[in-house]
Image (cartoon, rainbow, N blue to C red; front, top):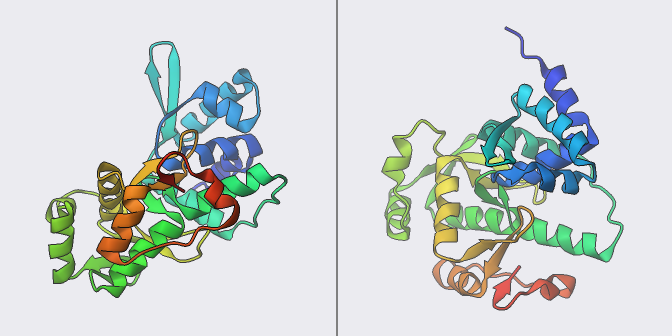
Length: 242
């Protein structure tokens, strides 16, 4: 059977549908009304677009009371969207707000259910430098030292290997043009970082902020630190660092 690439490409190729898909790339379900606002279209038009993407297998629909929520149908769609971002030209930035949002998204974001952006790439490369992760073609493997470190960090690698999901994939980061860790191990790492409050979600999108606690912990535990200058420093909220 030959894959029908044209059908999927036509679904993604519409500007409004593409915007809604990108909003869902963070892995969370979102209501139709919020997706309509993000795409700048009416709820009726959004419903039509969303129905086509559900029918085409790109999205799953969940109903909660009178509200309908949508999410990406699976992680493979997330990987495909990230790959498209990596080969796409950048959109022109038309305002200071757009510039700040872009810098925040480039610094840290979720890529489906794992950590991406400057923080995700730096964390992955640091674990490679320390010998915890070993590059193996398009995947990562975990060294014996890495097994010990992940266990102490609260990530059970043996349990992750027993699942059906790909264990540790190299995912090309569209903003850094280098790889971050995806798969079951990448998702577990992101979950643990949220759990430890080293990172937290920025409301209204898939951008992630590094908390003050996280900024200090990344430096103390892994020797990672970032110099944030200019407009990005204006995105602080209480003790949060973006």
